Length: 97
Length: 485
Image 1 (cartoon, each protein chain N blue to C red):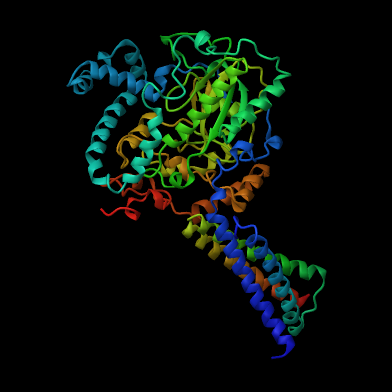
Image 2: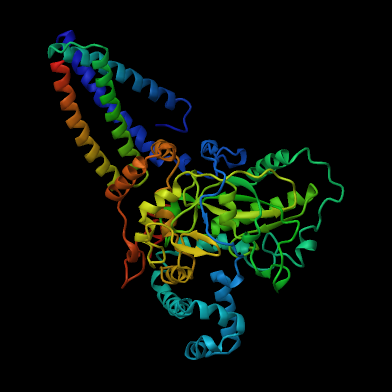
């Protein structure tokens, strides 16, 4: 994020780590309230989905940063829809299993 | 609010913020100048970062189909056009019309022989001449808009001109010129391995992004003309044993804004400085050397040497594509008798990708690039992609520049010519390791569906096109950002 700063760069990634930890802490309660019992493989699937969502967002914005705005938007739209569909499938799977 | 709800909404907000962070980090990675591979860490060889070891092959990926032949100097467009232009000027004011009317049969023997075999090239010469006149006539209309880029290009071209150009043109036969100033009392080199390693390190310190070493095959030596001697048929000099081949990229931002905002001269100048310094260095440690540099000071053809040296593979557009620089790879070489261990060629699947891709052919403003599914033409014993040089040069004489400064659209649109950041590293590392070609197909589908391309003739000025560039020009080349006009 701040490639030329020796202070802001590590601070940024530490903050990202904190945000992701908080996200997973919060999602635990959402899942519990939805009566979804989690185990190892379910957490792996959920984490993988979130990882790919973050990767898609990052990739799309990398293309935009390169000046390829149209490509970035199309990338985000296409893989965003794929991930939303996958997300709804995963939600159903978590509920069922 | 309950603690539980607080944690739930904090989690949701944190997830959203984390995605925002991913977007911001991605965006910065895209804009980061560090991704403009080539010059940042070149002196320490860190810009030659791709691990070629898993992709080494016994034979280069170009296909030998019959006995190789050396390239005749008239096969080189610039030498051919130079020769014909010289003849036309010798006829006086109406020389061009006269040669056009009288045709190929009126030409001096060598030109006649060439154009009899290549009559289309003769026709293209006159079409190009007309385009050049039109280009000059159009320039007043464009010159304010492109003032900065023209000035930038001319500044880069300035060290190439005149008698003081560096490195100096050879004066005399290679057996004398290549040994001029050679240290008469050299130390004994430990081994060719040491030699190659040292020379690569030194060449990187001079600014080369990529460096490779290969033995010089006879077929990569020009025939019919020898710098320092003139027109002659000659055998490859015995001391032209090895070639040190090196590459640098064009400046990335102007490169994406081809054809009108780019120039070849900035890379040419840099290559000439590297080659000239390397030539001097090699002589100082006791070995012969000779530079082969752009724009047209060659006795060797460099792209096949670069392929032999394992730097990359030939692309559909005829240019060497390397994993680090893509088609943004500009080459030069120094020949020497210094004992050097040769590098090994690579197969990165680039030629296979080019079979499918065709983006450069679709975007070429002159239609000079083949659409064939596989290389079909056999040129001097090798089956290869073959660009129509004459058509290509015609486009140089059409785009909105002050002179035929080049086009380079095929290099800019090439999917391999991308910055060095995480997203392209995935592609760079995964594609050559996938034997099925599925990753290449998926990437190509994304490339064609997601990315915008102006389309062939759009790069030309009106009425044929609209002076489009592939990418947006950087602010430092856009006159309107700095001057009123």
